[in-house]
Image (cartoon, rainbow, N blue to C red; front, side, top):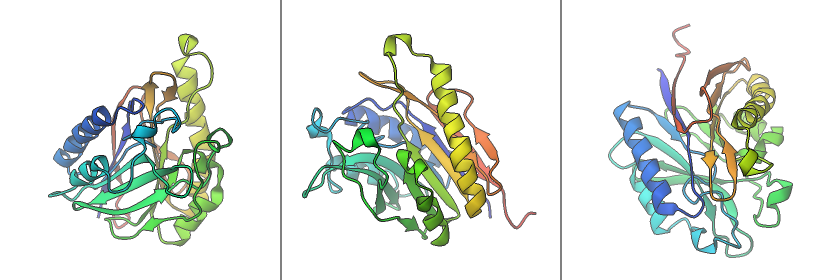
Length: 256
């Protein structure tokens, strides 16, 4: 049985929830037309990569209208949708959360464990690895700076994940006015190849990457859609940092 996945290299304006949801719907329509099994969007793709203190109105609960609208996009089709929000936390700072929608239901979520140093002022780290066994291929999730925590990938593989989706939004340093998009894209690609390629090989899993791309109001993102195979090789890649959809068909293990 082959599995078809879509990785969205997406522009996500900060706090522009309606705009981001419309883009997500457009990509979902493409995925449904192409009969994909999975469609993964970047970290905080629904809310944009917000500063919670400046954009507190864009922090969403799991039962918010925006989340319900996203979940509804998986109704009446066989597509598993994965997208991200800044999630409200009644007991502390918000979580960075990746949602999983399937058959019109919120089938689960994963909260970022490895919150980066420059995020700790604004976001709460979680502690639980989540693996999802119910789809066409059991899968796990990781979010951006989780790339620096090999245990997350190891534990997902041990729990039975055949593929791990890395949803990312690594902000680029330096002045926006002097941005070198090629070097930013190349930096993130090398990070993924060096670390995720190794994790894929060590754990004998596929690892797929979906990254925010383009210029938001105060931050730039490098883009990057990649698939790494169980041997650690890069099997597919976006051509550059332009927003778009990368579609990849995983090799049928019974065919070889």
